Figure 1 (tube, rainbow, N blue to C red):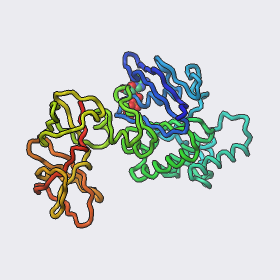
Figure 2 (tube, helix red, strand yellow):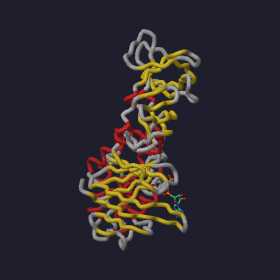
Figure 3 (cartoon, rainbow, N blue to C red):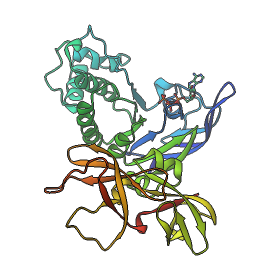
Figure 4 (spheres, rainbow, N blue to C red):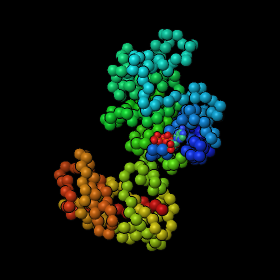
Length: 357
Ligand code: ATP
């Protein structure tokens, strides 16, 4: 990876409030990078320090090898797309997109018109130039905002929750379009989102932030399969957490008894004593009538059923455990959906268990 943006020892204070804490980060040229975390963790602040809308209290931000300390936002090779698209409803689509060129006195009308047409084509809005912006759908407005941000061909596009105003279906469609667009234009995208699914779907790499710090920085699969600690594990996807006791000869897991876990392969070192064991819902299973397994089985009772069409999520009570286990099952042909209160058998595999401090 060739780093385009680097942050070294970045801290940001708002008065006494420590919003960014010792951030070290490299974002690659052409990378689709996401900042993910709960509300208030500092992701927007981090994005704004890259954009130049916030000065850092301490530390260095460079873009393309150049220290940005004295470079104002409008002279940085970045452009930002906001959550509220800031589209002017009384202007046409083309006028909205051309707004991105307002400071370019060196361009004549024809040059501007061809740049607008090119930017509109980039976002799949060819021929929409004359339409009134107020008559567009949410998804189309978002594309106009993107075209306006891309028209000056910035090195970095900063996106602050750009899809959060769209309904679920539109959001999913725009996610795919944004990925395609990013690959097509090859510009570095830095996206802020609190939606973990959105980050997992779209990004080359994701920094998960908590309380002004980066909790883990990795690609989607690593974050999901090898979360570094409990905090990341519970923020990314669903996970069952069972209390446990680590002994020299194995790990005693609530409801599962003594289990042999490869403790030397856990994401963080665990010592003998109290711990927590995590299991993703899809690494557990239910054994239906007529099915066999060579894996381990526990008896349980169905406590809750949530049907999603393609999947069913069950909460299942097992003896010796205070809280039910959440288990994800694919709804394959011929497999019934169990009812609350039904006796069932839980299939589990120690290899899918992760032990955390
Ligand atoms: P959200 O998803 O809710 O936007 P976020 O992770 O983007 O959250 P930030 O907007 O970066 O969070 O804010 C981080 C913290 O800094 C918050 O506690 C916020 O209240 C505080 N903060 C942000 N901007 C300012 C400001 N201008 N003055 C004082 N405090 C601020």
